[in-house]
Image (cartoon, rainbow, N blue to C red; front, side):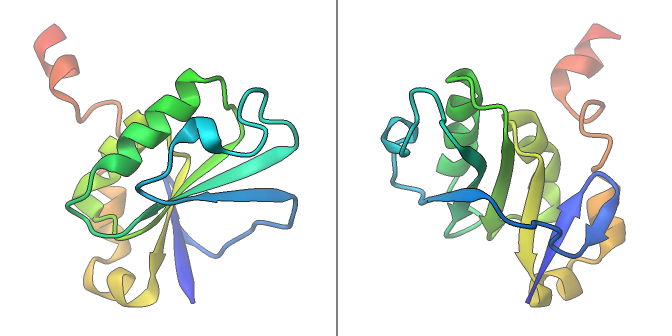
Length: 126
């Protein structure tokens, strides 16, 4: 099983269907089927093999820059400390395993839910 993390906290996977594309850490966003227009792609799931591999953040940023406006989900080894970065990169949600959710409870993720306030640029502006 898995847990979906959003700004609201933990929840079940509410995905009801539609076209989903999975991208691995070594894949190029331009190689996504229909990537030029994202025809019919309703959700893209970007895999994180390890928490120390930041390629998924770059993939998310590139997908958004290419015009993808659908649901974007980080899947795998993302830590609570990385949640704000994931949101700033363009992810809508994070899918984590139940065992990670047990080690990093919902309160740790919700502490980073105000992701716009937890970047160095906003602190410099004030």
